[in-house]
Image (cartoon, rainbow, N blue to C red; front, side):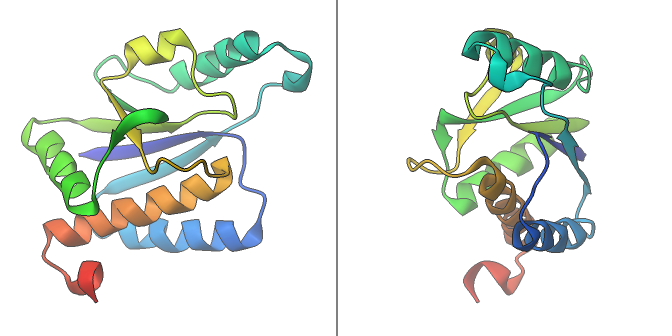
Length: 157
């Protein structure tokens, strides 16, 4: 199974880039994982929230294939414990999912078209995190899930 993480905007902070790169390299041992930052909408700060979300959705939809299983990282999504998230991944693999696409949207969330396109919504926490930090947190949790599935000691060191 291929895994793609789509993200609106680039990661600016070096410490976050370093952490993301660390987990991205570790993930290569388990699956074909790709993290793809998408350019922010030009002049987005001048647009209304709904128009901005619509344009971000257009950028995201260009990267999606009709057969993709889409998961939005969304504050209203289901929260999993790490072992439950690993079970979710195993379930997608068992179902024959060819490409699992996780999406981190912009600061205002997702457009209605992306909500209707998604099969799942996932929340990392009831707390609100900076979108750049979410990238690192999610990459770590994805790595943790694969170590759980392989019974490796990382999860409970």
